[in-house]
Length: 173
Image 1 (cartoon, one colour):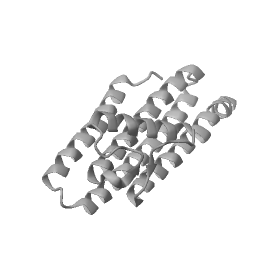
Image 2 (tube, helix red, strand yellow):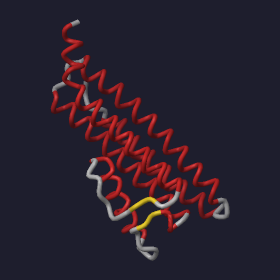
Image 3 (cartoon, one colour):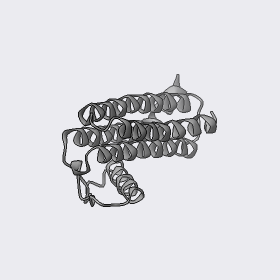
């Protein structure tokens, strides 16, 4: 099993295209904030289901093909960076809709700095560090934050820790 470079490039591109498209749509229909909050949360859940399914499929395929542990870790690191980027951009979209949805982000912050702040938050969520000076304040922000934490827990605890045992159980068959 090789690391699918083209597929990963396409997945990164789709994450960024969703973010760019959503920002454009927000500018056209800015008066529908509640609607856009619901859309961002639903797309976040859709992406989370996709990431979870993809991780499980890659776990099983890697174990079945006897992929070395270090190559599997590279594959999972790529998937984790996709998830971290995806959630960071979703946080940024919520921030564009309502700058008060996160405490700890200056309301007059430049867009690039805000994206970095949300990448920072997303990385801390995914690494279980448990501390951040950026906190979700609204229900949509809390839902997406919680979704990332649950997905990170499933990815790290179940997928990464079970790789060796799954690989051994498939070898024994």
